[in-house]
Length: 308
Ligand code: ADP
Picture 1 (cartoon, rainbow, N blue to C red):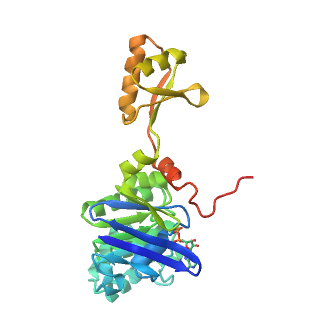
Picture 2: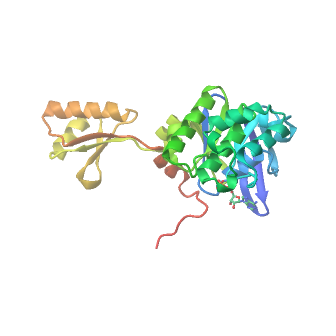
Picture 3: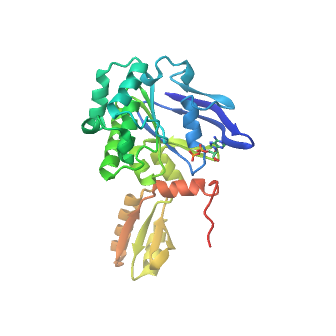
């Protein structure tokens, strides 16, 4: 479990993290989202004792990072900046980490195997691709078999197979009952990986909720309908309390919260059949995490691209 209470970080006049409080619970993958510059990395660095809070606390299983004995056995982390000695082989890098944390040397082979780097264990990370570097970073995070894991942008530089592998690794770690806290700017990937979300903007908490609730509360779900008889269809839907608005390209967009899109599409199909109205399209449109995120964080982006 990670607990952040009133966490604040100022760099001179700049407030990077502003009174953040949230908890990351075991058994779930918790996604950490926010526009660029929102304060995600600063928060993660403070949890890991790499940066000192101006005020507030960050606790790992009830203790500050600097009070943990053999910290790698408590919390593992992959941060964006690679902290690998470029001249040491992958195996020696991990062996050195294991020795300095009282981790049995046999664990090195296990994690190399787990991340698929066995065959390059004797190579120096200098020649590694970005994706191999990420795998080595993940191996280091897993070395002490910790109950709490933090990953900052873990799929950066990975190919589709690597992304798939990371997704399943995160889920497996959470299913083991571990605490998994992961940031990513890839919304579609996050939507497939995380069960819970912590969303921040300009250093402040915007949402701390399940993935399903976050999407349901911040994005629109509707059914797109095309028909050559829009007026007749509108009348039919109105009798059932379904509002149909004009959408783009001649389509109608029907909504009746809290009905889910599949349920609503079925009802619309039935009403159209009863009245003999021809339909050319009837498609439930599911709200996406990306849309929900954009709506919630709009106007909270530090550096927005200017048009023109
Ligand atoms: P994110 O990870 O969400 O993109 P960061 O935590 O990297 O955001 O940054 C949050 C804000 O704090 C940004 O405005 C950034 O410029 C600023 N910041 C981060 N680190 C420093 C630092 N060492 N000195 C000054 N400002 C910093």
